[in-house]
Image 1 (spheres, rainbow over the protein chains, first blue to last red):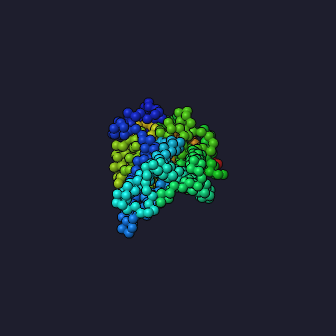
Image 2 (image 1 turned 90 degrees about the vertical axis):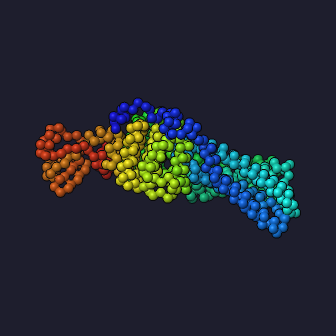
Image 3 (image 1 turned 120 degrees about the horizontal axis):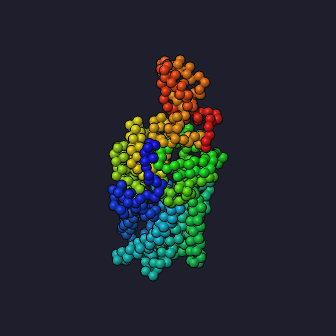
Length: 260
Length: 293
């Protein structure tokens, strides 16, 4: 053993040699490069997103067909189901990002800050994409029902001119609930339950503030309880504050075996 | 070079690691020994930057290790509980490691999985305790990380699997030299692998030395019970074993060559100090014999 040590003239703490890694891995050069945190998060969540998308479409088609068998569509089923999912899926994803995936990345050579940056990029993509899915789906639903002449009296007709406003009425809650999920989960990850449980209340604020100030209902009514600019600013501020709090909680947290 | 300077880890009022100073030359296999609750896992957590020390620093090649991406890339810390998703299949866990680690050797991971007869189609949650340990060993060795830390990675493994693990560890170390830290309670079983041994007790490093030097610190004397007892008079006895009329005593300190020659003439056999005997002796004392910290 000592002989082996003496005969080795490489410095094992030096940076890994990528060409050596490629030779030993038996894979092509592009596969040998480590994936970024956000790219790996997209890969991890892809099956989940695809399954949920499939379920959402199946539920939408089934429910709409069932309702249409009785009377024309009086509301947007898409806005009900997917509008709710645009809040609660990010909440769940936020919880998983800390409770399940954090230690996975740390165990594979990433730092806490690298992970948090990756989560920020991933979260931004979710926050931008999910409201777009809500609006696009509403557009498709509205168009199809229009072609079938099955829009009831209360159905919110989709207009391209309103798409941006609709998008901006979904986005704050998506961002707020995602931030709440991450922050509440971070509280449980870092602290003991008797500290983390009371922290659920402030952790929930971003989601509740956004949902309380700006929302869209199943009849397509765009609602804000304050002037939109102020409501939007307050929602974004609550979400950013949660982001800062997550950084403070997670920047030097011990990598635990389980959350809580 | 890996250095720990005044590393202290406290959980509330409990001090798990108490001001440890360690210098670890690279390209070496270390054995980290200590009783339950001696602070081994806490020390390793600090070494791997899994936990920020309450005081002190860990330096790798002179760089602060905590939250340092250059250092993080070069460390693989395998805990007994495994930091993987239980719902994932083993092959997915290995693929994930392959995507995230530049030094990952997929062929070697496949070879190790075959060697351990690890069913990569199984979900992690369906693995037995021993199989989870095997997965940990695969993740640790195939990562080919310049600093590989294996914390009680043998848990639940049967004797055959452990033997395969030790053999593979040594083979791979010789072909890909790196720094490996093994924490274990199976001291005699693994002692031959260690180039250096670190013994911890109550949060402090009692001893850190080359294994050969430790073996030279004492002698095992074996022979007829009466002769051995007579020979040992005046020496500190570290360990004792008896079988029938044969007795083996582990004595502290180097012996006078004349005494050894006399003993051999009387039919006594002399061997090197057992690391386990030394460990038991050091860590079962109310006060340590030696505290090098």
